[in-house]
Image 1 (tube, rainbow, N blue to C red):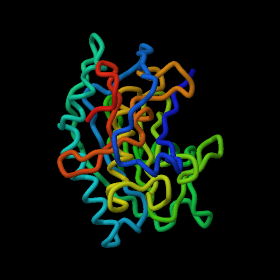
Image 2 (cartoon, helix red, strand yellow):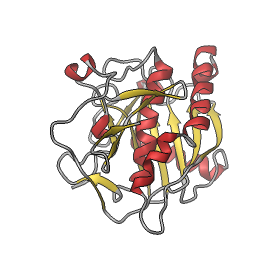
Image 3 (tube, rainbow, N blue to C red):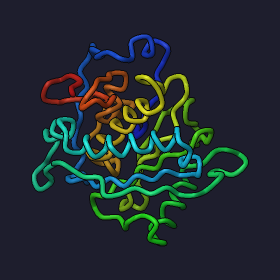
Image 4 (cartoon, rainbow, N blue to C red):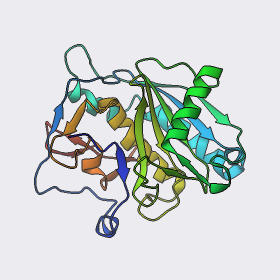
Length: 255
């Protein structure tokens, strides 16, 4: 069993009650599989495309950076401490920087990027010094511009199947991908900024607790990670729209 590692698009039923705590009939249980954890995560945000220089998108980018500055030392991270294991205590993190990649047309004329292309560009940016070199705690958040979709290796598409996901390159470069969310099934709060903080909080917690697919996840199909179980449970923390996360200890979604 492998973990899901993505933020699923909400179903019609979930959208009808997406902004409340969802009670689960049967309690899931996350199991630790012996792998890496991001014990003191270091987030670096990448805003890909010249569209991020436009006033509306620039405001969203600033909001996201402020969100990470707050959330990485917030009660949301404190709640993940129960998933610490001997020698790998999960604690607070920090945002270590940001950059805007001045590419006018990410994805080219097809207006879509594959996960393989994102991995390739990320490695090129690291090699060129455009983004910092990876450590065992570095987590790159890649935000694509409006109108550019993302396609996974299995051909699933953003806004059709998923709203975001996390992955790794060679078990040493950890990243999350967040398409510009202005689509049904990926909309939360009052607009794109709220939708992106919600999905980013989901992937942040999953990347911390399961960066390589051998950390914490449910062995019952479909292999839910900490965020998947609570995908439709949304709350406010520090003025930001965030997702509740699963607690084994309390057997419910918590914030």
